[in-house]
Image (cartoon, rainbow, N blue to C red; front, side, top):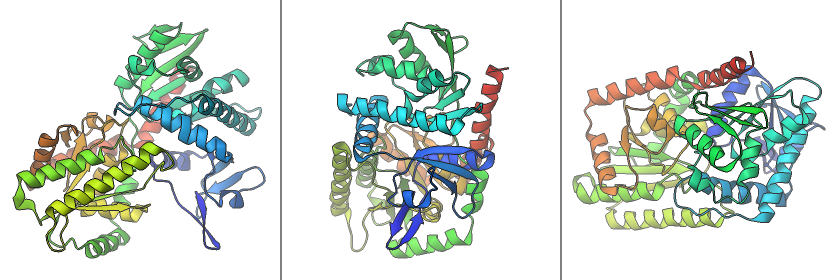
Length: 460
């Protein structure tokens, strides 16, 4: 994303799990990434066709920008994508908001992206890899225009059970759009099962549970689990750099963390991430184990997101008010138990925070995968640190060396914090070694290759 900084144009890499996973893949393979240009300087850096070679300092692939009007951004992105589909798919008891005007714009933006993709492809054969819930209608639009396209889509968030999905007024059109894919991927088998059950309940179609396929109108869609991951080796190497070491010292000094047991949470500020539940567990931990007062500091860091949406603004206020309340309750001299850092953190700062910490808490109420957990593990080549991980994340299936928590169960969550802090060194090392081996073996290149191999197998 390119933005003006005074008279100068600077770029940032978005704080997104999807970008973390896909950027190394497309750098390795090349190709064109079609994406909305949201930066205030994005239009200044592209050519007449909306192309720019990226990364700017070492170009490895092409970015093709799509431009949206203010109304399109509001209704397509903030409206239907994030006030309807996002809460519909995450079981966190946030009521979806279905608005007819948002839905109409969502459809038109999917068509706008379809037109751009078809323009990029031209008369060539191509593999189109669609990302996420913003483009449920795109696969069918593309197939109807160019049937020989090979289309896969990866759904980065959970898929709800069929009863939860039934409340969507445009559910049939969404499902028919997704069945335009040749291959549809989810993080875990459970989400694949939910999707096929939803199709079975809502559409006239043939479901083959032995092959995990859905057939409608003669068109077959294969549904498979592909647990997404990270570039383990690259992240592990970067985290050991002198730059990160210096940043660790700067943060420690700036926040006064000398002789502290340090916990860290790194999340986009989103109501699915369980940040208030995390703060309440820390409150209960300090109530039950007062010997840690003055000795334990928890750093909650991450970017504010989707602040245009009321639910997100309210959530942001809840987090802040809870932090103030807990800090007021326990503060002693300069010490407060919670530090809330809300800004965009670059790679170096994120890795410094991971390495500084004695424990890392991922307490999502519902998450497709959660790559923070995997990034934390990649940075810990010292084989120290303890990961507390919500059992409601896709990552919990793979990262069995973590302490798994139920973020709704405040008392057991508080006890898990104590267990993590007091875990013997040998036990920490054994758990971290096991998780590092898992993430290193099942890295993002393995994920990408699994999808390509599946497509090759399907079309031999």
